[in-house]
Length: 262
Image (cartoon, rainbow, N blue to C red; front, side, top):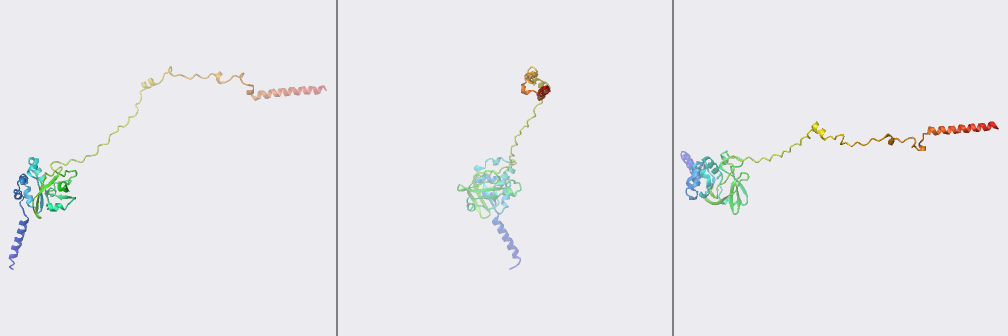
């Protein structure tokens, strides 16, 4: 084989491979009248060309009747919202069926943009009520965009799934509300020290001499009994001894006189 033919064959194979994986999302959607508004929005915002540059995507298309107020928003905001509807992987209905009752986290083009925060660039898909529901992976976000049908697919490059309504990603068109801080503790005022009373108040509250009732002072007569009123047993021992000594001396004199008479 002529060596000059080899580079030509390689180039042909590369072109064939690229053409097989390439697609034009605007041209594809134009075949489905239910998604004309959605198609206009991805073209207007420039998102269509970015989608066409991908080799594998799943597009969650919004029908005309569910576009809502997306058409009234700025192109920048609309593009952010629609990039959350472009999943960077291939999912058709058969692949979704394998999820069963599990919830799977999907990566979107908004995550790739570098503008996402707090899981804004991710979606959750869950099997529910014989269908599948999509919603933002942001905490407490609604998950109510139902899968309605498979619009088209080209395994394993592009799959377009029709959903019931736009996926709402909290904070994508406005700053996320900060997490609520705990309420401040109730301030208990410190009890103020008792108010010092003025001298005038003290004098007013102090009882006067007329108001005071003094207990009568005990009289001396009442406290100390008189000498006459003392009982004989209460006399002092010194006076009793003197009287006994006098009686004994008198008896001794009488006895001495009687002895002298004899």
